[in-house]
Length: 204
Image 1: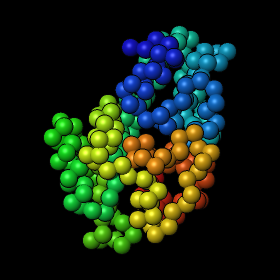
Image 2: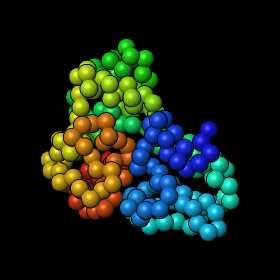
Image 3: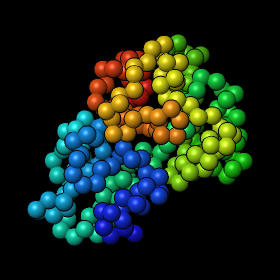
Image 4: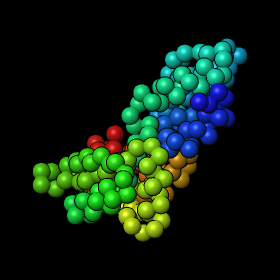
């Protein structure tokens, strides 16, 4: 287990935790919604940040390795911190084909369908994987075995209009699908008003 913040950063990356779910060290004011830890004169302090505003202190640890274990426990207690949305479509056949591919590769996925603007009879299909299975998804996308889908094109499909990607975000959506992951609002925290209101109902 990691005993320093530097080791923790490597561990969280290697285990495919959501980069937007946590922040280690100073500079947390850019975060949309994240668990944060920072070294202060009092010790290693943990807190939450939402839209750049920090909460009261969750705890302060004098020992760095204890702080690493404690912040990791916070992340492990939040199911979204290792969850990756790897498919989002209105095409049932497409989502079922992706499910079949993942099952063949031994990847456990979780399906979650949501209504769309059209209401009943017009659903959207979402597929999630956990943790290190994200590496398998990246490989399958690179090999062309599952589609790389732009979040912004999917938002256009849902609502009929999509804002320009916020280029100032520390975790902006990319043209390739794998990094446009749940919760998407962490990449849009600087100006939620740019996202159409009906889209916000599904994204947050």
